[in-house]
Amino acid sequence: MKIQSLKGTNDILPSEIKKWQLLENACRTLFELYGYEEIRTPIIEKSELFKRSVGEATDIVQKEMFIFRDKAERSICLRPEETAAVARAYIQHNLANKTGMAKLYYMGPMFRSERPQAGRYRQFNQFGAEAIGSYSPHLDAELIALMDELVTKMGLKEYDILINSLGCKKDRQTYKKKLLDYSLKDKNIIDKLCSDCQKRIKSNPLRVLDCKNPECRKLVNKLPTPKDCLCQDCQDHYSKVKTLLDSLKIKYIEDPLLVRGLDYYNRTTFELVHGGLGAQNAILAGGRYDNLISSFGGADTGACGFAGGMERLILACEAEKINLPLKDSISVYIVTLDESFYKYGFDILHTLRKSGIKAHISYEAKSLKAQMRQANKLNSRFAIIIGEDEVKSKKYTLKDMQEHEQELIDKKTLLNKIIKLNA
Image (cartoon, rainbow, N blue to C red; front, side):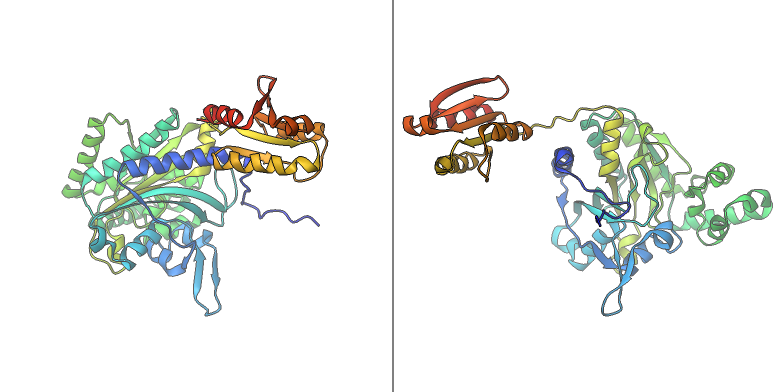
């Protein structure tokens, strides 16, 4: 019986990994250019961390978290997102006093038990940036600019940036009251909402705007929006973010229904969506979360961040038929024509690798034809052939697999030629 991978998980094979490494390195380079430093948190966390931060009424907590009990009967989960874990680490390690404002980035796997589909998996890979320690609208604009520059560097063009403001805690209470008052006046709309939304509209009305049910999506367009209830301070903050984006010439679309699927967001929220991804069209998304640190027992602290899906970023590049510049080092295959010549081949193999050249050799006795066939399969640019004549002359046959030419040259000249071409 063959054992298959679990549904909703994927093997990233060697034929694909170069693409992933290129995108990961591009993310790291840009994050560090903007002053963000890498952080790595555990894959498992206490379930309470996400129940308190993401929200009990969210789909993530109610339907999607992988939760289990450990030997001590503690409720543990596989992390469904990273912002809450970064916030926990920020408080636990007292980063406020150690670094002042903390600008952190991360990459790694996240886990959600949802129906697998294009761009959405049960184990998926995210990268993101979190800036903790400022309430300034400049921070919101910087993160949106970072997000925009990142996809632009990948060559993407067919995307839109959506922005909105959810306001502060008081604005949320105002919005909740307005929505409840509206529901009493127009029961025709409320009664047509799905059963989940009919519960949410009383406990957590913002979740109604985030419902993925197609019928609910049509109905919410008729409901009041959070933007209708912004206090003056929140209006001013949102206005400054837009002015900063305009000054940076970053195009955006205001979407009054954009709330994101997590409860900790307040004020600015944003998404970068791509037309080639179908229903699951968000590549990157985030916003401000000024109340999260204090909800975990820390001081009142302004914070903002975003996360992106690596799988969705790759799908977007494929949708636009972008040929990523997958530069590879020169590959060399050592061909030995007799077992007694293997020591010469192994010496060359070791020397090449120490010089930063990717080199292969057959570990089994094979014919010249079989070894050359393997060199082709490995896309080797050169084959170095070592036979009786080569050993006697103390020279090696260097075959250029690309130009279909070969020459007999000494070891030093051979190495210099390959190293120069690999530079």
